[in-house]
Image (tube, rainbow, N blue to C red; front, side):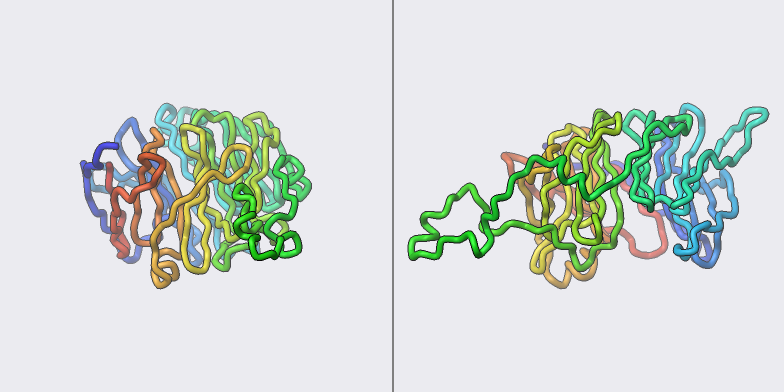
Length: 354
């Protein structure tokens, strides 16, 4: 891969008394950034703004009290902008799906709640072709909605989904199945693991749900905690059929990103002494990994919360930490740290393009 070159680096200061920045989305047609500010525990208000030419302009603002008593305030789970209709779509944890029209036609509202999920929403993601919205709910269901917000699929998560997996475990790695003779290590089958993972949860698991689509939009993967015991990655077809379930992986966290080329799904595994980016095939089987080279102190500080994102041509993987972004690339089946971008931890918006 060629070297990365920074083509723009700018810092936009956000006033200290402003609402917190909660989500961003690119308007590729206008080469500008759409941003949401709020809501927060102290102010149940959402502001939608456009950042262009180093200045913010207000598109809309509205009150957004959270309808769920178990949440201290509502939050923006997904922000998508459609340049063809000059429309922004917000999916809120409280259950509302809101569209904001920058240039509403006669008879249209500037702000409209086009749908609501009474149970609340845990994650949302639009398909790459922007024709299908996938939503997971607090009632452990997966919903598919069209661009017109018509519900076309309603799928329930179940512990029995594990039966969709074709993985076979005969107990290898457990103490009761091990030969203990003097030459046991030399005779051990090298194709079998020394330890079989049970899917134990990470001590820092935040119970988040993540949805990620394959680049062609034919499949999506959902990473969620199953029965408070283990993280399970479910793969569904675009039609809503369960395709596969991941094998148990100890200390797997909520981060998940499907490589657009379609061959692997990246996740994060946090052990006591290291953090690895682990890969899965579409059938749920593990497919390699690489370490992030963090010290124990770094794992507890800026490495305590991690998310993942591939670039559009599948050549680089961004590993996002609290105050920095690492860009990793692969060559000769080995992953290399290509660049590390330090972010300003003060109340500002960093904008870097590569």
